[in-house]
Length: 479
Ligand code: SF4
Picture 1 (cartoon, rainbow, N blue to C red):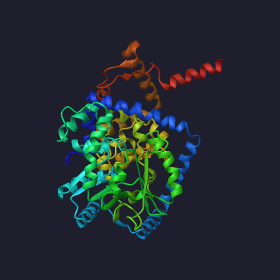
Picture 2 (picture 1 turned 135 degrees about the vertical axis):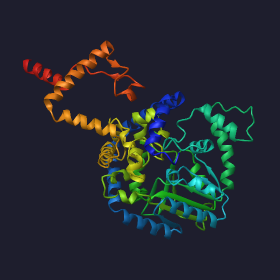
Picture 3 (picture 1 turned 90 degrees about the vertical axis):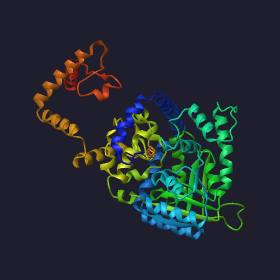
Picture 4 (picture 1 turned 180 degrees about the horizontal axis):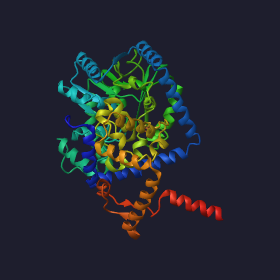
């Protein structure tokens, strides 16, 4: 990502490129085909699904109301089990804490499970600059690491790529790969990645994982994966580092069992992910394996400032990805367009919260407000409402473009003069309907070139809503 361009500019530029990119558009079509039906089937197959969503929301709400209490309890339990908690206010502190642990371990190679927080603090770049070899072990993350790209989806980081592209990356990066080896099937690609990664697990001095949840009652961190890579990452090296943001804490194991039931169903349509791994402290005397050191790097990075604001509810997010899987904007532009770590509707709310509305205020404008994100969010996060809050702030801070402000002033003039408003909208409706003809759609329209460049504009029916409503009422009275 370019440091000199704002997220808003990046979003605009990359969205235009994404709409022209045929390969990306095909890959984004797979997001719609794959995830939506699976989630719908999984939800329909569990009669208490809606009730579980309510409970999951209430558990997180309660936790956020008493976050200090549960975090302190969590730390107490981690210490009791022989682990250590590193409290980090921002990305720099978290990177520094991880560097110190790696240096103390004399580490040369670090394996990593999938972690959006490590993307947020640009951990790989930092460790590599310090001379460490960092190896991503989640298949999708491994692929994008070979390409030097960020994830394009929070649970499917390489969803923007085709199988052919992955094959080409493996042939380029894997020096030992025989030229005649068949890599045309997904299974053979997975086997190839596995053969390379197995050795890395053994070589690694430190394993870093994220955490889907931290349990206050036991000091446990939980990771949810489908590949088992997280288990090898955290159990084979001498040192295990968990990096997690502070809102990941949940009071009890019983609470997390409720949230886990909605997580996998919302994310991939599975009843449960293949691996749900609980990790509590370092290896004990009687354990056959496990790390000798267990560290938790607990990151704030702007979350505590969200508490008590209209954005607190965003901290309920469990990173399932359902909102982007159902978002028509994400389906059109993909994850890289969003320009920072978190794409889709959750990113449109979280990114301005973490890096500021000045920098990322345009993202909440990338919404049709169709409401699908909120309707599928397992934690019932009111994403559209929060995007509206960001739009208000963008407007109040005079960050919205002059054309938008002038457009709103123009609309206000008419909207506050009902007679002129009805006359002019009636005229415009008739005119646009006449221009569209039988097709009912316009392929060019003044002031709407951004829209009509990529798709046709549906023309009004020739009458305004008020006119149609009045006619309908008249018919009803006459009937
Ligand atoms: S906002 Fe909701 S749907 Fe989106 S990733 Fe978070 S929990 Fe999932």
